[in-house]
Amino acid sequence: MRATFLAAAFLVAACGAEVPAPPDASATSSAAQEVRREKPTVKVMTRNLYLGADILPIAAATGPEEALLAANVMWATVQASRYPARAAAMAEEVAEHRPDVLALQEVTTWRLGPPLACLAGAPVTPSAAEPAIDFLPTLLRALQREGLHYEVAAQVTSMDAELCIGDPSDPASLRDLRYTDHDVILVRKGVHWRDPTLPPAQPLPGFVPAPVPPGPGDRNGALFAVALEDGTPATAAFTVGGSSEPVFSWRGWTAVEVERGGRWIRVFGTHVEDTLQALADAGLPPWLFQALQDAQLVAIVDAVYLDPATTLPTIVLGDFNAYVEPADPNPPTYAFLTGGPFPLDPALDGISPLRDAWAALRPGDWGFTWGFDEDLRGGRLSTRLDLVLATPELSPRAIERTGVRTRIRTGQHPSDHAGLVATFALP
Image 1: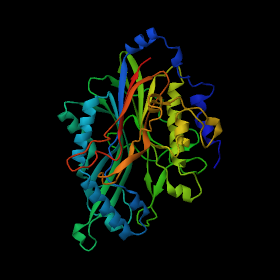
Image 2 (image 1 turned 60 degrees about the horizontal axis):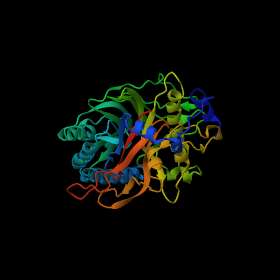
Image 3 (image 1 turned 90 degrees about the vertical axis):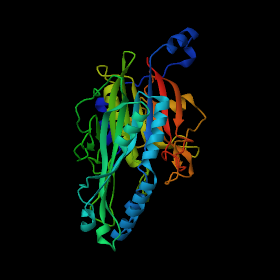
Protein backbone atom coordinates (compact mmCIF):
# COMPACT_ATOMS: atom_id res chain seq x y z
CA MET A 1 0.00 0.00 0.00
CA ARG A 2 1.38 3.41 -0.92
CA ALA A 3 1.85 5.64 2.10
CA THR A 4 1.48 8.89 0.19
CA PHE A 5 -2.08 8.39 -1.07
CA LEU A 6 -3.57 10.36 1.81
CA ALA A 7 -1.42 13.44 1.39
CA ALA A 8 -3.39 14.37 -1.71
CA ALA A 9 -6.65 14.01 0.17
CA PHE A 10 -5.63 16.81 2.47
CA LEU A 11 -4.02 19.24 0.04
CA VAL A 12 -7.10 21.41 -0.32
CA ALA A 13 -8.11 21.01 3.31
CA ALA A 14 -4.87 21.73 5.06
CA CYS A 15 -2.01 22.82 2.84
CA GLY A 16 -0.32 25.76 4.49
CA ALA A 17 -2.94 25.97 7.24
CA GLU A 18 -2.18 25.76 10.92
CA VAL A 19 -4.41 24.11 13.49
CA PRO A 20 -5.27 26.68 16.17
CA ALA A 21 -3.59 26.04 19.50
CA PRO A 22 -5.73 25.58 22.62
CA PRO A 23 -6.03 28.68 24.79
CA ASP A 24 -3.62 29.08 27.69
CA ALA A 25 -5.79 28.43 30.73
CA SER A 26 -3.10 29.78 33.07
CA ALA A 27 -3.44 33.22 31.49
CA THR A 28 -7.15 33.49 32.20
CA SER A 29 -7.90 36.14 34.82
CA SER A 30 -10.77 35.95 37.27
CA ALA A 31 -12.48 38.77 35.37
CA ALA A 32 -12.19 36.82 32.14
CA GLN A 33 -13.62 33.78 33.88
CA GLU A 34 -16.63 35.85 34.90
CA VAL A 35 -17.15 36.92 31.30
CA ARG A 36 -16.75 33.32 30.13
CA ARG A 37 -19.54 32.20 32.42
CA GLU A 38 -21.90 34.54 30.59
CA LYS A 39 -21.10 33.17 27.16
CA PRO A 40 -23.75 31.13 25.37
CA THR A 41 -23.43 27.38 25.47
CA VAL A 42 -24.33 24.40 23.33
CA LYS A 43 -25.16 20.98 24.74
CA VAL A 44 -24.59 17.85 22.67
CA MET A 45 -25.12 14.14 23.22
CA THR A 46 -24.03 10.94 21.48
CA ARG A 47 -25.82 7.62 21.94
CA ASN A 48 -25.33 4.25 20.30
CA LEU A 49 -28.79 2.65 20.41
CA TYR A 50 -27.40 -0.91 19.95
CA LEU A 51 -28.91 -2.92 17.12
CA GLY A 52 -29.83 -5.67 19.58
CA ALA A 53 -27.38 -8.50 18.84
CA ASP A 54 -23.93 -9.37 17.56
CA ILE A 55 -23.89 -9.85 13.77
CA LEU A 56 -20.34 -11.23 13.62
CA PRO A 57 -21.42 -14.91 13.88
CA ILE A 58 -23.30 -14.46 10.60
CA ALA A 59 -20.19 -13.08 8.93
CA ALA A 60 -18.23 -16.08 10.26
CA ALA A 61 -20.74 -18.66 9.00
CA THR A 62 -19.14 -21.02 6.47
CA GLY A 63 -22.26 -22.50 4.88
CA PRO A 64 -25.98 -21.81 4.33
CA GLU A 65 -27.13 -23.96 7.26
CA GLU A 66 -24.71 -22.28 9.66
CA ALA A 67 -25.75 -18.85 8.35
CA LEU A 68 -29.43 -19.70 8.86
CA LEU A 69 -28.77 -20.84 12.42
CA ALA A 70 -26.75 -17.69 13.18
CA ALA A 71 -29.48 -15.47 11.73
CA ASN A 72 -32.15 -17.25 13.83
CA VAL A 73 -30.10 -16.76 16.99
CA MET A 74 -29.46 -13.11 16.13
CA TRP A 75 -33.14 -12.36 15.51
CA ALA A 76 -34.16 -14.05 18.76
CA THR A 77 -31.55 -11.99 20.62
CA VAL A 78 -32.77 -8.77 18.97
CA GLN A 79 -36.35 -9.46 20.02
CA ALA A 80 -35.24 -10.35 23.54
CA SER A 81 -33.35 -7.05 23.81
CA ARG A 82 -36.73 -5.27 24.13
CA TYR A 83 -35.95 -2.16 22.17
CA PRO A 84 -39.19 -0.26 22.93
CA ALA A 85 -38.43 -0.43 26.66
CA ARG A 86 -34.81 0.48 26.01
CA ALA A 87 -35.88 3.43 23.89
CA ALA A 88 -38.10 4.67 26.71
CA ALA A 89 -35.15 4.51 29.12
CA MET A 90 -32.89 6.37 26.69
CA ALA A 91 -35.61 8.98 26.16
CA GLU A 92 -35.59 9.56 29.91
CA GLU A 93 -31.84 10.18 29.71
CA VAL A 94 -32.39 12.72 26.95
CA ALA A 95 -35.17 14.39 28.94
CA GLU A 96 -32.86 14.73 31.93
CA HIS A 97 -30.20 16.56 29.90
CA ARG A 98 -32.19 18.16 27.03
CA PRO A 99 -29.29 18.31 24.56
CA ASP A 100 -29.56 20.76 21.69
CA VAL A 101 -28.08 18.17 19.31
CA LEU A 102 -28.28 14.39 19.62
CA ALA A 103 -26.08 12.13 17.45
CA LEU A 104 -27.31 8.53 17.20
CA GLN A 105 -25.63 5.38 15.92
CA GLU A 106 -27.10 1.94 15.15
CA VAL A 107 -30.49 3.45 14.44
CA THR A 108 -31.83 0.18 13.09
CA THR A 109 -34.83 -0.82 11.02
CA TRP A 110 -35.76 -4.51 11.11
CA ARG A 111 -38.17 -5.73 8.44
CA LEU A 112 -39.57 -9.09 7.31
CA GLY A 113 -40.48 -10.30 3.84
CA PRO A 114 -40.89 -13.27 1.49
CA PRO A 115 -38.06 -15.83 1.64
CA LEU A 116 -36.10 -14.60 -1.37
CA ALA A 117 -32.68 -14.98 0.31
CA CYS A 118 -33.76 -18.43 1.52
CA LEU A 119 -34.56 -19.49 -2.04
CA ALA A 120 -31.48 -17.94 -3.58
CA GLY A 121 -29.15 -19.34 -0.95
CA ALA A 122 -27.18 -16.09 -1.16
CA PRO A 123 -27.60 -12.39 -0.38
CA VAL A 124 -30.24 -10.67 -2.49
CA THR A 125 -31.07 -7.04 -3.17
CA PRO A 126 -32.83 -6.01 0.06
CA SER A 127 -36.57 -5.72 -0.50
CA ALA A 128 -38.34 -6.95 2.64
CA ALA A 129 -40.85 -4.24 3.62
CA GLU A 130 -42.97 -5.59 6.48
CA PRO A 131 -42.12 -3.49 9.59
CA ALA A 132 -40.87 -5.46 12.57
CA ILE A 133 -38.88 -3.09 14.82
CA ASP A 134 -38.15 0.49 13.74
CA PHE A 135 -35.79 2.27 16.11
CA LEU A 136 -36.12 5.92 15.06
CA PRO A 137 -39.90 6.44 15.22
CA THR A 138 -40.02 4.40 18.43
CA LEU A 139 -37.44 6.70 20.04
CA LEU A 140 -39.15 9.87 18.74
CA ARG A 141 -42.46 8.72 20.25
CA ALA A 142 -40.71 7.96 23.55
CA LEU A 143 -39.23 11.46 23.52
CA GLN A 144 -42.66 12.95 22.88
CA ARG A 145 -43.99 11.11 25.93
CA GLU A 146 -41.25 12.90 27.88
CA GLY A 147 -42.51 16.22 26.52
CA LEU A 148 -39.64 16.60 24.04
CA HIS A 149 -39.73 17.08 20.30
CA TYR A 150 -36.67 16.47 18.15
CA GLU A 151 -36.34 16.96 14.40
CA VAL A 152 -34.34 14.73 12.08
CA ALA A 153 -31.68 17.08 10.69
CA ALA A 154 -29.32 14.53 9.12
CA GLN A 155 -29.34 10.85 8.25
CA VAL A 156 -27.15 8.40 6.36
CA THR A 157 -28.11 4.81 5.57
CA SER A 158 -25.17 2.48 6.00
CA MET A 159 -25.57 -1.27 6.06
CA ASP A 160 -28.62 -2.78 4.34
CA ALA A 161 -28.66 -6.57 4.16
CA GLU A 162 -31.25 -9.34 3.89
CA LEU A 163 -30.91 -12.77 5.49
CA CYS A 164 -32.92 -15.97 5.72
CA ILE A 165 -34.53 -17.01 9.02
CA GLY A 166 -36.85 -19.84 10.00
CA ASP A 167 -36.91 -23.63 10.32
CA PRO A 168 -35.43 -25.33 7.22
CA SER A 169 -37.56 -28.43 7.94
CA ASP A 170 -40.70 -26.27 7.68
CA PRO A 171 -40.59 -24.27 4.44
CA ALA A 172 -43.70 -22.33 5.47
CA SER A 173 -41.73 -20.79 8.37
CA LEU A 174 -38.96 -19.36 6.22
CA ARG A 175 -38.81 -15.58 5.97
CA ASP A 176 -36.33 -12.95 4.94
CA LEU A 177 -35.02 -10.66 7.69
CA ARG A 178 -33.80 -7.26 6.52
CA TYR A 179 -31.36 -5.28 8.63
CA THR A 180 -30.91 -1.59 7.77
CA ASP A 181 -28.59 0.62 9.80
CA HIS A 182 -28.57 4.42 9.98
CA ASP A 183 -26.65 7.22 11.64
CA VAL A 184 -28.91 10.13 12.59
CA ILE A 185 -28.59 13.64 14.02
CA LEU A 186 -31.58 15.04 15.91
CA VAL A 187 -32.01 18.70 16.85
CA ARG A 188 -34.30 19.77 19.67
CA LYS A 189 -37.33 21.66 18.44
CA GLY A 190 -36.86 25.37 19.07
CA VAL A 191 -33.13 25.23 18.34
CA HIS A 192 -32.44 27.02 15.06
CA TRP A 193 -30.59 24.76 12.62
CA ARG A 194 -29.64 24.63 8.97
CA ASP A 195 -28.05 22.30 6.45
CA PRO A 196 -24.26 22.31 6.82
CA THR A 197 -22.20 24.69 4.69
CA LEU A 198 -20.06 22.00 3.10
CA PRO A 199 -18.61 21.92 -0.40
CA PRO A 200 -20.55 19.93 -3.02
CA ALA A 201 -20.13 16.20 -2.59
CA GLN A 202 -17.16 14.97 -4.56
CA PRO A 203 -14.64 12.13 -4.16
CA LEU A 204 -11.63 12.90 -2.01
CA PRO A 205 -8.39 12.59 -3.98
CA GLY A 206 -7.02 9.09 -3.63
CA PHE A 207 -10.34 7.50 -2.63
CA VAL A 208 -12.96 5.54 -4.57
CA PRO A 209 -16.43 6.66 -3.42
CA ALA A 210 -18.99 4.16 -2.18
CA PRO A 211 -21.14 3.07 -5.14
CA VAL A 212 -24.34 3.35 -3.10
CA PRO A 213 -27.12 5.91 -3.68
CA PRO A 214 -28.66 7.67 -0.67
CA GLY A 215 -31.42 5.77 1.08
CA PRO A 216 -34.93 7.08 1.75
CA GLY A 217 -34.79 10.04 4.12
CA ASP A 218 -31.02 10.47 3.83
CA ARG A 219 -29.71 14.02 3.93
CA ASN A 220 -26.66 15.94 5.12
CA GLY A 221 -24.33 12.98 5.22
CA ALA A 222 -22.44 10.43 3.14
CA LEU A 223 -20.73 7.05 3.23
CA PHE A 224 -17.00 6.61 3.52
CA ALA A 225 -15.08 5.36 0.49
CA VAL A 226 -15.05 1.73 -0.56
CA ALA A 227 -11.34 1.67 -1.43
CA LEU A 228 -8.25 3.64 -2.32
CA GLU A 229 -7.34 4.31 -5.91
CA ASP A 230 -4.43 1.88 -5.55
CA GLY A 231 -6.93 -0.90 -4.77
CA THR A 232 -6.52 -1.01 -0.99
CA PRO A 233 -9.96 -1.72 0.59
CA ALA A 234 -11.27 1.02 2.88
CA THR A 235 -14.58 -0.61 3.89
CA ALA A 236 -15.11 -4.02 5.47
CA ALA A 237 -16.93 -6.72 3.50
CA PHE A 238 -17.91 -10.26 4.34
CA THR A 239 -19.71 -13.19 2.80
CA VAL A 240 -22.77 -14.92 4.23
CA GLY A 241 -22.79 -18.68 4.39
CA GLY A 242 -19.95 -19.13 1.96
CA SER A 243 -21.59 -17.06 -0.80
CA SER A 244 -19.29 -15.42 -3.33
CA GLU A 245 -21.30 -12.18 -3.17
CA PRO A 246 -19.85 -9.76 -0.59
CA VAL A 247 -21.96 -7.78 1.86
CA PHE A 248 -20.36 -4.43 2.65
CA SER A 249 -20.33 -2.99 6.16
CA TRP A 250 -20.70 0.64 5.11
CA ARG A 251 -19.91 3.42 7.56
CA GLY A 252 -20.58 7.12 7.22
CA TRP A 253 -20.95 10.60 8.66
CA THR A 254 -23.66 13.21 9.13
CA ALA A 255 -23.55 16.96 9.79
CA VAL A 256 -25.72 19.92 10.76
CA GLU A 257 -25.25 23.52 11.92
CA VAL A 258 -27.06 24.97 14.92
CA GLU A 259 -27.34 28.49 16.25
CA ARG A 260 -26.89 29.28 19.93
CA GLY A 261 -26.66 32.79 21.32
CA GLY A 262 -26.24 34.32 17.88
CA ARG A 263 -23.36 32.02 16.94
CA TRP A 264 -23.37 29.08 14.54
CA ILE A 265 -21.73 25.76 15.41
CA ARG A 266 -21.06 22.88 13.02
CA VAL A 267 -21.75 19.41 14.44
CA PHE A 268 -20.73 16.12 12.85
CA GLY A 269 -21.83 12.63 13.83
CA THR A 270 -20.15 9.38 12.81
CA HIS A 271 -19.77 5.67 13.41
CA VAL A 272 -16.45 4.37 12.10
CA GLU A 273 -15.38 0.78 11.60
CA ASP A 274 -14.31 -1.43 14.49
CA THR A 275 -10.93 -3.10 14.73
CA LEU A 276 -11.08 -6.36 12.75
CA GLN A 277 -9.33 -9.62 13.47
CA ALA A 278 -9.55 -10.54 9.78
CA LEU A 279 -7.20 -7.66 8.97
CA ALA A 280 -4.74 -8.81 11.63
CA ASP A 281 -4.93 -12.35 10.23
CA ALA A 282 -3.94 -10.92 6.85
CA GLY A 283 -0.89 -9.21 8.36
CA LEU A 284 -2.49 -5.74 8.34
CA PRO A 285 -3.24 -3.37 11.23
CA PRO A 286 -6.63 -4.32 12.70
CA TRP A 287 -7.52 -0.60 12.71
CA LEU A 288 -6.71 -0.07 9.00
CA PHE A 289 -10.29 0.65 7.84
CA GLN A 290 -10.90 2.74 10.94
CA ALA A 291 -7.83 4.89 10.21
CA LEU A 292 -8.84 5.39 6.58
CA GLN A 293 -12.34 6.47 7.63
CA ASP A 294 -10.99 8.78 10.33
CA ALA A 295 -8.73 10.36 7.70
CA GLN A 296 -11.69 11.04 5.42
CA LEU A 297 -13.67 12.54 8.29
CA VAL A 298 -10.84 14.85 9.31
CA ALA A 299 -10.38 15.90 5.68
CA ILE A 300 -14.06 16.88 5.48
CA VAL A 301 -13.90 18.72 8.81
CA ASP A 302 -10.69 20.53 7.83
CA ALA A 303 -11.91 21.53 4.39
CA VAL A 304 -14.43 23.95 5.91
CA TYR A 305 -12.87 24.63 9.31
CA LEU A 306 -9.56 25.89 7.94
CA ASP A 307 -11.15 27.98 5.17
CA PRO A 308 -11.81 31.51 6.54
CA ALA A 309 -14.90 31.75 4.34
CA THR A 310 -16.59 28.73 5.96
CA THR A 311 -14.90 28.26 9.33
CA LEU A 312 -17.14 27.58 12.31
CA PRO A 313 -16.54 26.12 15.77
CA THR A 314 -16.90 22.38 15.22
CA ILE A 315 -17.97 19.41 17.33
CA VAL A 316 -17.60 15.79 16.21
CA LEU A 317 -19.62 13.13 18.05
CA GLY A 318 -19.96 9.42 17.71
CA ASP A 319 -18.85 5.86 18.15
CA PHE A 320 -15.24 5.89 16.97
CA ASN A 321 -14.41 2.38 18.25
CA ALA A 322 -11.46 4.16 19.82
CA TYR A 323 -10.56 1.55 22.50
CA VAL A 324 -9.01 4.03 24.93
CA GLU A 325 -8.17 1.95 28.01
CA PRO A 326 -5.38 1.32 30.53
CA ALA A 327 -3.74 -1.29 28.31
CA ASP A 328 -3.49 1.25 25.48
CA PRO A 329 -4.26 4.82 26.62
CA ASN A 330 -3.37 6.42 23.29
CA PRO A 331 -4.20 4.00 20.45
CA PRO A 332 -3.17 5.07 16.93
CA THR A 333 -6.50 6.25 15.57
CA TYR A 334 -7.42 8.11 18.77
CA ALA A 335 -4.03 9.81 18.75
CA PHE A 336 -4.62 10.98 15.18
CA LEU A 337 -8.14 12.24 15.87
CA THR A 338 -6.92 14.33 18.79
CA GLY A 339 -4.08 16.07 16.94
CA GLY A 340 -1.34 13.44 16.98
CA PRO A 341 0.45 11.40 14.31
CA PHE A 342 -1.38 9.56 11.56
CA PRO A 343 -0.31 5.91 11.62
CA LEU A 344 -0.32 5.43 7.82
CA ASP A 345 1.31 8.60 6.50
CA PRO A 346 3.57 10.99 8.47
CA ALA A 347 2.59 13.80 6.08
CA LEU A 348 -0.71 13.96 7.98
CA ASP A 349 0.74 14.08 11.49
CA GLY A 350 -1.00 16.71 13.60
CA ILE A 351 -3.54 17.60 10.93
CA SER A 352 -6.66 17.12 13.10
CA PRO A 353 -7.89 20.28 14.84
CA LEU A 354 -10.00 18.26 17.28
CA ARG A 355 -9.53 17.77 21.00
CA ASP A 356 -11.18 15.29 23.38
CA ALA A 357 -13.60 16.94 25.83
CA TRP A 358 -13.47 13.98 28.23
CA ALA A 359 -9.69 14.06 28.48
CA ALA A 360 -9.76 17.84 28.95
CA LEU A 361 -12.24 17.81 31.82
CA ARG A 362 -11.66 14.42 33.42
CA PRO A 363 -7.96 13.56 33.22
CA GLY A 364 -7.27 10.32 35.04
CA ASP A 365 -10.88 9.12 34.60
CA TRP A 366 -11.07 6.46 31.89
CA GLY A 367 -14.72 7.18 31.18
CA PHE A 368 -15.43 3.74 29.72
CA THR A 369 -18.43 3.67 27.38
CA TRP A 370 -18.72 0.07 26.19
CA GLY A 371 -18.70 -3.45 27.54
CA PHE A 372 -22.18 -4.67 28.51
CA ASP A 373 -23.01 -8.20 27.36
CA GLU A 374 -24.86 -8.95 24.14
CA ASP A 375 -28.08 -9.72 26.05
CA LEU A 376 -27.60 -6.50 28.10
CA ARG A 377 -27.99 -8.32 31.42
CA GLY A 378 -24.37 -8.45 32.52
CA GLY A 379 -20.89 -7.32 31.66
CA ARG A 380 -19.17 -4.10 32.61
CA LEU A 381 -17.98 -1.01 30.84
CA SER A 382 -14.32 -1.70 30.11
CA THR A 383 -13.13 0.57 27.27
CA ARG A 384 -13.88 3.97 25.74
CA LEU A 385 -15.26 3.76 22.20
CA ASP A 386 -17.42 6.89 22.12
CA LEU A 387 -15.96 10.40 21.92
CA VAL A 388 -16.97 14.05 22.01
CA LEU A 389 -14.36 16.00 20.06
CA ALA A 390 -14.26 19.74 19.41
CA THR A 391 -12.09 22.47 17.94
CA PRO A 392 -10.06 24.48 20.49
CA GLU A 393 -12.13 27.67 20.53
CA LEU A 394 -15.02 25.72 22.06
CA SER A 395 -14.41 25.53 25.79
CA PRO A 396 -15.75 22.31 27.38
CA ARG A 397 -17.73 23.11 30.53
CA ALA A 398 -19.12 19.72 31.51
CA ILE A 399 -19.19 16.14 30.28
CA GLU A 400 -20.71 13.00 31.76
CA ARG A 401 -21.85 9.52 30.86
CA THR A 402 -25.48 8.43 30.70
CA GLY A 403 -27.02 4.98 30.97
CA VAL A 404 -24.28 3.57 33.18
CA ARG A 405 -26.55 2.24 35.92
CA THR A 406 -29.95 2.45 34.25
CA ARG A 407 -31.93 -0.78 33.87
CA ILE A 408 -35.29 -1.49 32.28
CA ARG A 409 -37.92 -3.62 34.02
CA THR A 410 -36.33 -6.86 32.79
CA GLY A 411 -32.98 -5.90 34.31
CA GLN A 412 -31.36 -5.10 30.96
CA HIS A 413 -29.24 -2.07 30.20
CA PRO A 414 -30.64 0.40 27.63
CA SER A 415 -27.68 -0.28 25.32
CA ASP A 416 -24.34 -2.04 25.28
CA HIS A 417 -22.85 1.48 25.26
CA ALA A 418 -23.05 4.33 27.70
CA GLY A 419 -23.94 7.71 26.24
CA LEU A 420 -22.01 10.97 26.52
CA VAL A 421 -23.46 14.42 27.06
CA ALA A 422 -21.27 17.55 26.98
CA THR A 423 -21.70 21.29 27.27
CA PHE A 424 -19.42 23.79 25.51
CA ALA A 425 -19.08 27.53 25.93
CA LEU A 426 -19.01 29.37 22.62
CA PRO A 427 -16.17 31.78 21.81
